[in-house]
Amino acid sequence: MNIIHDKDDLRFYAELEGEEAELTYTYPEEGILDFDHTFVPKKARGQGLADDLVKAGLEFVKKENYKFIPSCPVVEAFVKRHPEYNHYQEEV
Image (cartoon, rainbow, N blue to C red):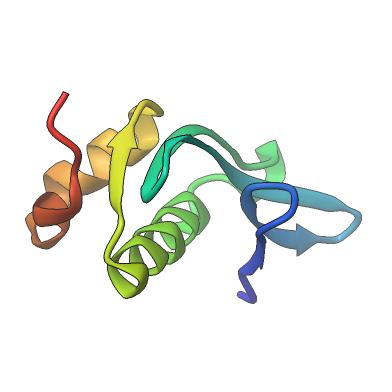
């Protein structure tokens, strides 16, 4: 699956037969991403696509040495299963 980072639209997304799956974010402060929404079309659910989107977002955070806020429950659940990203989580 090809995950695209659209920095202008503040999202990571994948195209799926005329639909899109996406992970959106905002910048509440410089160097901090707030992952606020994940969407996967119904026919593509249960295949790990949400995890792929979240991982792409977190790898971007890691590469840029940013921090993140897991406002989206999907991101929060992913981080609980992958504690290697805890270092990048912003203390709230």
